[in-house]
Length: 446
Image 1 (tube, rainbow, N blue to C red):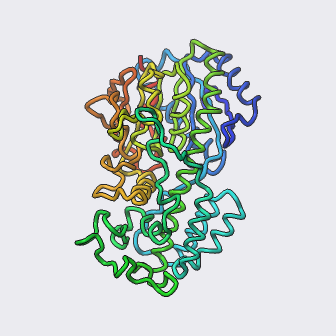
Image 2 (cartoon, rainbow, N blue to C red):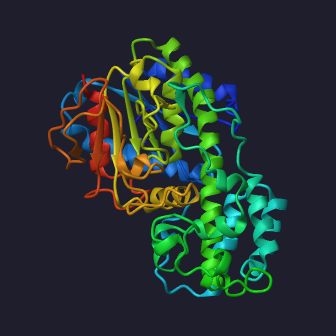
Image 3 (cartoon, helix red, strand yellow):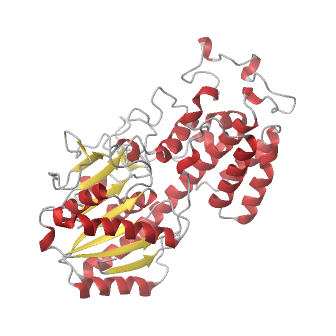
């Protein structure tokens, strides 16, 4: 890396893992005499080397594009990488092409369980249930109950009207719904052709809301509630189980990202600000790392820019009155209370299948099924898919992510939704020159 660089590890609770790392980061910034400090935060990684590779790729791209950025020659940059125990919650290649065999589906699900369930005892139990999921209603119930133990507690009492609230809490069905309804609702959007929908009223049902269902809404069930379960084969049930695993891991990681951001990263920012008050602070995070930094920004005033790369959280997170009941998104204070003196950038694209997959499953589980699962009309749509919505500070008209050397006009305190379809091909494709150029323009903006 060609910039002065330090790392700070943060635990899942939000505590800084090693105080000496934070002191070293603060001392590096003070000694470097940098005009700007960029705090980077990774998302869906399993280990520190993966996070470091992302930081290296992105900073290499920053180095390459800096000559094309107006004002960059007069500014010097130091970088601090936040490292935290994230979980790989959805794989780029999980969109099934329809040709995978049952053995492949079983192997994929077993590998996903091993990757995403941190408790080895719980992972072993879930893996042992996989062969019985299609034939046994009891196995499906046990599988779902085991996953539910991963989900953070949800407040019982609703927040007072007109406050900043969690804009996408876990759907009630995921927490306590009947497994025989929850499983069919958990498939991703790519499984629409063979996916049953909720009995009694969800979009896509025939006359009377029960097309294709027998008496009692359970056509095709075998003696144990399985066998020809809702007309799906074993592979279909396994894909639904994987959808449940994805959405459960999403809510686990969402909670953890909030703790890491509001705790360790906010503490780091405060330390940097005290040690070098004249230095401008910038944030850039990918996936769940974008949520980490949004949580940190909500706790820390005095930031210059914030760049969210394919954020894996709600498109209403910065919204005002997102539900027409006066409630604001959880991170609304970042904008409403003017924590930023410069711009916020948000890359978003229809190519981000990972964000779309998790949110489509959540939408189904919440019975919000519509024609555009995961899009701007879906209450469970993601910011990495659609940008920030219902947010007054969004600059209009919107703009695409541009090629290196193009002229951006980023405005202080405004949100710039950058449609990235041309240059971001997937959830993890966030370190190219065009992304780095936009980020560098934000860092150098007035």
